[in-house]
Length: 235
Image 1 (spheres, rainbow, N blue to C red):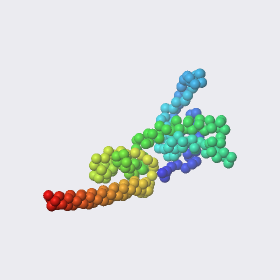
Image 2: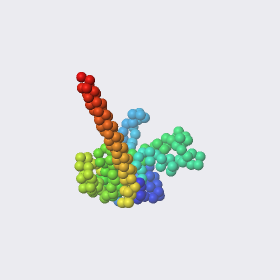
Image 3: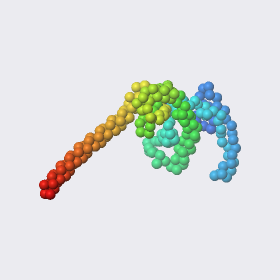
Image 4: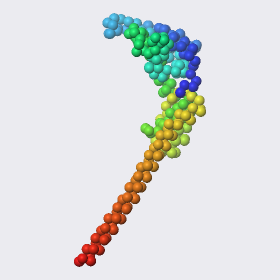
């Protein structure tokens, strides 16, 4: 769910900036850089790498999150679509070895520079949006909130009375609109409905088994009584 992400033009500008050696970043961030020498054992020679003093390489965590990338494969797909895809080449499989290497280099650079920001957004729970509340290991519900702390308080208030022994955890999912929670909770309620129906079938089968056992017991009891009566008359 990506309801409030930036437009393609802005995202393209950010990615192009992150691909350069020293990104300029966005207004007000002012990243600075150091050149660090190190020995590369694979190449068997000294190399230089760029280190940035800014945790998001010149961009806030929210800006990086709103670019829409959630995994390394998302970045790789974007790089291919933006720089290498054509009418003749519609899948990465058909790229030459050199161009596949180009996709990998670009994707690695962008991913390495944004992955920690994405983790911080997920872990901080400080962005308004959709949050997943895990109730034990098999139940998930979705709430809208301004932060994970707000959703956690809401979940404790609303869910603890009906799940008193549950160990609840709150996870940020994505930016969203309040109305989005209805659709996101449909699978959870469908699962509960299926569980209820399954348990009802089990209960019905158990009751049927009980009735059969009762009939069997009564039948055997009658046979034993009749056998006793016959034996007593014979003696």
